[in-house]
Length: 88
Image 1 (tube, rainbow, N blue to C red):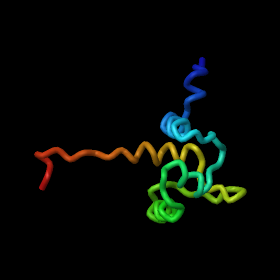
Image 2: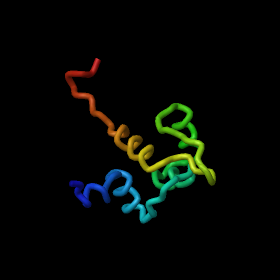
Image 3: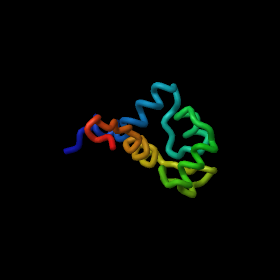
C-alpha cells in the first residue's frame, strides 16, 4: 500500500528550493528556469550541462530539464568538507 505523503514529496530538495524562491513546480524546466531558481546565469547552467554536471534533454517547447534531473543535481551538490587530517 502506498503512502500518499511520500507520493506528493517525490523531489524534496527541488520542492523546498522552489518554495523558498516562490516559484511553481513545473513538468519541464528551461535553462532560464534553472538559472532563476539557482541564482545563476544561463551561461553558467549551459556550462554545467557541457561539463555533464546536470542532465540536459531535448524536450518540447525549449524545455531541457525534468524535475528528477534537477533533484539529482541538487543531491550531488553537497559540499564535502575536508578534515584537517585529510589535507595533503
